[in-house]
Amino acid sequence: MTWEAVIGLEVHAQMLTVTKIFCGCSTRFGSEPNAQTCQICIGMPGVLPVLNRRALEFAVRTGLATNCTIAEYSRFARKNYFYPDLPKGYQISQYEHPICEHGHLEIVIDGTVKRIGITRIHMEEDAGKNVHEGAGAFSYVDLNRTGVPLMEIVSEPDIRSPKEAAEYMRKLRSIVRYLGVCDGNLEQGSLRCDANVSVRPAGQKEFGTRAEIKNINSFRYVEKAIEYEIKRQIRVIEDGGNVVQETRLWNADKGITESMRSKEEAHDYRYFPDPDLVPIMVDRKQIEDMRTSLPELPDAKRHRFVTDFGLPEYDAYLLTAERSTAEWFEAAVAAGAPAKAASNWIMGDLMKLLNEENRSFDDCPIKPQQLAGMLQLIDKGTISGKIAKSVFDEMYRTGRDADIIVKEQGLVQISDSTAIEKVVEEILAKNPKEVERFKAGDEKLLGFFVGQAMKATKGKANPQMLNDLLKKMLS
Ligand code: ADP
Ligand code: MG
Ligand code: ZN
Image (cartoon, rainbow, N blue to C red):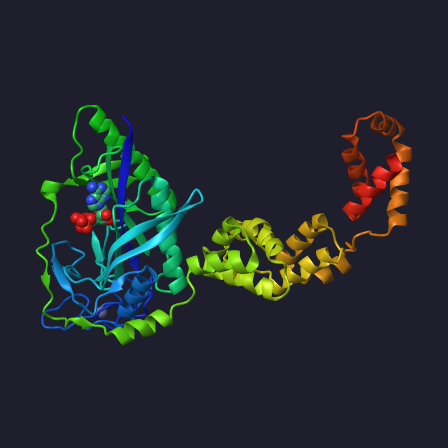
């Protein structure tokens, strides 16, 4: 029996507003507990919440960027439950009338494009945080996070593998970061994901019973948790049992999912429209204005990089995942860098160096114009591609221009054929046995001679000239 997994993700994205969703308190992270609270966000009786215009705008922008229909009429609902980090006894969310519906986004899996449906995006407020560590016999409640604006982005059950789930998540992250509506930081919880997973015999139409996995906070864990859960469900069924609908927690230490609560224990939230908040009306004109003000998004950029710069799909995909990378690349090309060469240096050496230091292209020590400058030195034959590697490292370390580094360190390529000829003569004279073997047909030895000549010139001999001369003088 072969099995097919069916997956749908619910992603919570913390919006990058300066103030909370229904009051003027700051959303800044890391302040003294409860320093950023007021009567409204802790829900004192008689107060009136007012929607943060910016939060609405961010949700609409996200909806537009994911091909959703924006509701001209939407409203907030109360989701009722008790927990110490929720002093009001209800969370303000959206239920029957979410702000965005019926969207989709595209992911690329093994070179093919796949569309994943987005059921809805709604706005809601975050809850507070219970603090148990370092408190001795006590637990504390920190309400700074209460009322921080969130978007919940719910996907259709269109995802079929752990890899697709991680790609979907990456794409969402890329989009919200392009829009500037969320910083996309999984570790700090600005982007959180619950995964709904079920399995069915391949070819069957109906979905199987799903389990929902919470507590997933990295791309690696998205894949691992879902992978584990699929295997677990298949095992349960093949052993003659039934998958039960339940909420499970990902235990990263053990690498397994564990039951948290079953359907019977699930909350009945008794949603009802929030009487304190007026319905939200967004007219067509406002929606269209926001649509035209959207930045160029990753997919559009990717297509343009392929058509305008002739880049392979793979390069274009990598370069456009982050807006700062894409803009850095375009600045380098604008400064005269050949596109493919720039792409190679960015995807190779530069990303490696930046990753090692956990830096982004926003604070890259090399300026795009400096890469263009170095590539011109290669083009003109001033330095070889090999020497360029060390020039590049030096540029990264010191922030200085390539031509200055090359001059100071005497790295100019030797393209004078008499000079190279002299070096080759010496090497051939020093290695008569190898010359004999080469002439007897052992052509692999060419590499040996090239190595010797490069050593003698400290890597500065023009590789093309050296090769040509060697072949000529050995024949
Ligand atoms: P709830 O709010 O109770 O979690 P929803 O109907 O909103 O339920 O669904 C939540 C998520 O579960 C959605 O992303 C949806 O695509 C996904 N989903 C629904 N049914 C299944 C299923 N049988 N297998 C996997 N995912 C599913
Ligand atoms: Mg759910
Ligand atoms: Zn407040």
